[in-house]
Length: 380
Image 1 (cartoon, rainbow, N blue to C red):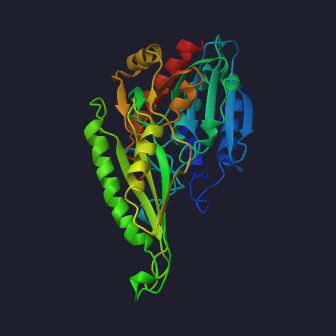
Image 2 (image 1 turned 120 degrees about the vertical axis):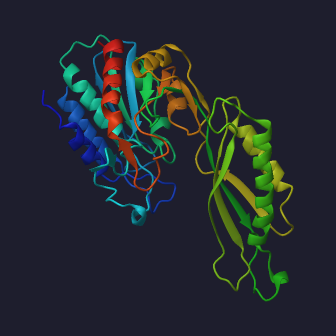
Image 3 (image 1 turned 90 degrees about the horizontal axis):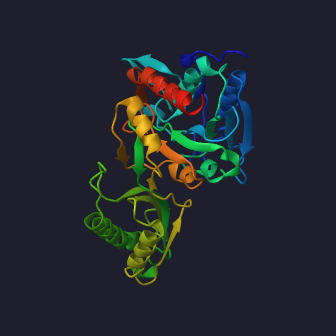
């Protein structure tokens, strides 16, 4: 057995390896180099390695690394990709781990490449032990966009797993519930013409202005009729993410595209919300225009842990009470495969997707201790 690099070196290597996933092809990248680094380090510790390319997603792969055999095992899971970034807003190189002010800065330092380095560091002193139940390290592709990696998982692939912890940044609080998410595309289509006479065309941009008013009213209605006080953001949300349309100031705009997301509470149904929104907007489309509302990716359902044992264990190991969060994760996909799942990892979601992303150094050793405690309890 060879010893993987030291903790900071592993985190540095992962952060230095670009693996952006995006709904926009010009930003999307492969995650294979991150997977290969993790595979090499885990193989050095004695894990059996399976790398699975994602069908229909060139350059994207999942990693499954397993130590031990039998049933009732533990999965430690995370995603290998990051979001796109605004380099000009960073004070440091986003692809270089920078230690400053008792923090690690870098793209993925918090969300969530450092988690893999912490897992390997936690397992190092246990690798020679006899594993009574299997430990699986799962590293997925495209969590930040299509979730193609999580969608590709099958029950057969993790047939021996009983518990799973997804190491998203939660401040080391066990998260047993989170909202679902839909990413949607709304296209308004009209007809172009010379801007000197509005009657020569049908302005998609004017129509989109009317539709946006209806979307704001729909968003307010969701907030009024659905609330859950266990969430910091207690109502469903709708975020208007980006808008594009037209091609010149002196032409009537013939198309506008709006991309947005909707995050629903546990107990709500994505499909019902989407249908209601579609019906509401269709009733307010001006004459001469058409509206299409479609999913960018299949939706992610809200998550609620299927059991209490793992939550209780993590509460004991961390000293933190369970929480509910507004962001979505891959947890619903593991839950659907009959694996009791909880989300918990170092760092804060407030730093995720931000310039100058960081994880506090004070979170690292407690995270290692929690991971090692999980492995000792459920695998050794």
